[in-house]
Structure formats: structure tokens, C-alpha cells
Image 1 (cartoon, rainbow, N blue to C red):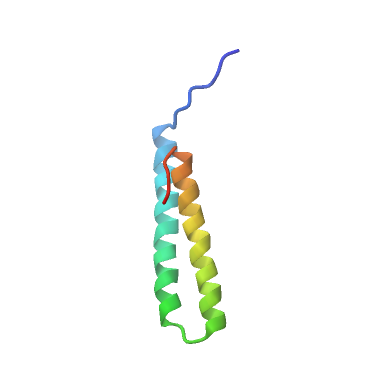
Image 2: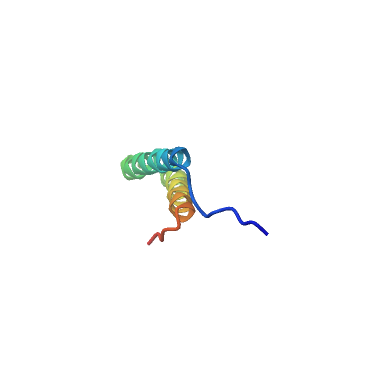
Length: 69
């Protein structure tokens, strides 16, 4: 049986890179604002948003076969 090579096209790599950048920047912004907020309820919500973006960054790295620590 013929197997598809395990490669990523240049276009796919560019899009994955863009997805990582979007999530990384959104995560940085969320983390910044979590430190600025006084309300614990809002702070916890913003930290959930931050964690979502961190997980998305991890998924982008995993798509490329890398490890995230």
C-alpha cells in the first residue's frame, strides 16, 4: 500500500506559523490583563483564556513534531 509522505507544505507551514503567532500574542495580552484586573472572578476568566491560547500553541508545535515544555 502506498503511504503519503510525512511532510508539511510551505503553505501549510506558513499557516501553522501564523496560528502559533496569533495564539502566542493573544496569550501574552491575556496574561498581561490578568495582572491588571482587581476582580478575582474576571482574573480567573482571563487566565482560562490564557490557558486556552497556551494549549493552542502546544498543538501547533505538536503538528510540527516538536515538544513543548
